[in-house]
Length: 340
Image 1 (cartoon, rainbow, N blue to C red):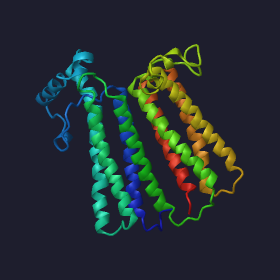
Image 2: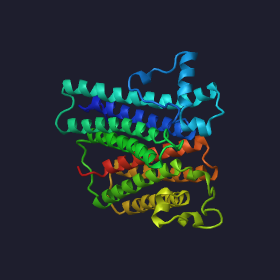
Image 3: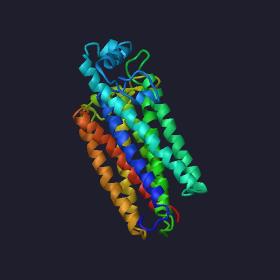
Image 4: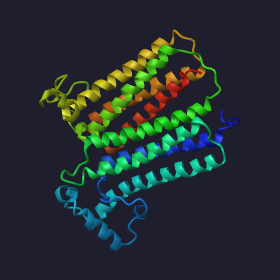
């Protein structure tokens, strides 16, 4: 597919960026689920890439951590060795973020000088760079919310940080697919194209609610399915006033919305697959819909087991990875059904 493509180096560059963003999301999920995200209490763009190198550096870093709420209220019993364990994941997360910055910026200027990217593609690549840079800012903005009074990050900021990463990946993947399929002639199927776009929007909202669930620790309660305990809608879903607050700040309300949206996403995918049988599709379009139904089913089951087992780290991370692959499959379908 790429053998004779004149954009091959740029496509490889963009896809490499997608892989690194995927790795960033995985490490970010582990960081969150191991409660490691507040272990680095300052942000130094250059010097922050150098970890503590000796025992004296580690003690100084640990003493900084001791000045903040998470240590004082939650981890006051931590030894230096325990601190090193949580520091590792946050440090690795930030290190990969820096690596992504270098992987995007340096080749961008190289390709620009060599005229490998021209016209509208320059603007698209600049957008990707801006999204990546903004993501770095959002990461620190999120961490800061947990260094003030409450030793936990704002679930709003967590959701913003997570969805920004997913959208950066989605747009980067979209641009790469545009270059890969640039000269392909595709059957025009407006109905499916609009349906996949709607699916994309619903999935983005679902990912945001997944972050709300994580940020509010809503996955540790009502660990039953399909009911919430012994009822279909738990009392906690509507316990707060005004009513709408439950669905953005309430543990029960947020989990309820996440459950409902999961069923809607699955339903939309099944609906599109059934409707697609009425149209003449090419191979890529058929494959994109098959990929969607397989991935959405796996993700749905992962969500159920993650809830039933009260979010063990490996299942929580796998569920987040499933969301990543689902969004990627949707972008692939959007590209497949895009107008030639």
